[in-house]
Image 1 (tube, rainbow, N blue to C red):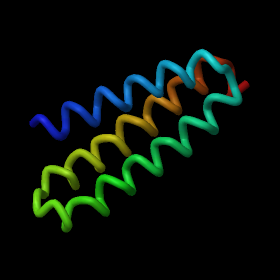
Image 2 (spheres, rainbow, N blue to C red; image 1 turned 60 degrees about the vertical axis):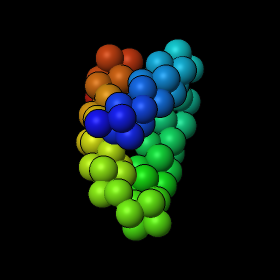
Image 3 (tube, rainbow, N blue to C red; image 1 turned 90 degrees about the vertical axis):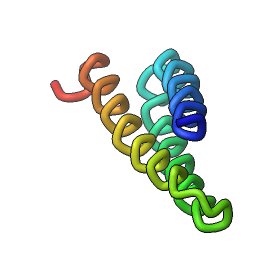
Image 4 (cartoon, rainbow, N blue to C red; image 1 turned 180 degrees about the vertical axis):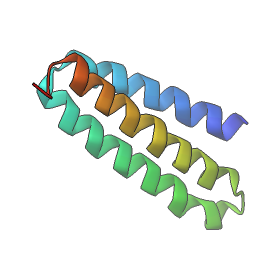
Length: 78
């Protein structure tokens, strides 16, 4: 759970920073989430720890949902 926990903390960090930036932060967060999740999945076979794949999937799911939530809060679907 250490690998997953650290990745979730990183996700929370840049989600908060991107949330402060407003609408421009949403695109930046989307980019960060995709790169972060992709990096986790690519690292998994080299590290021989499949927790990296779990971390990547969780980062992708939580990151995209928080991006959607920030868009709704900022009035992106009016």
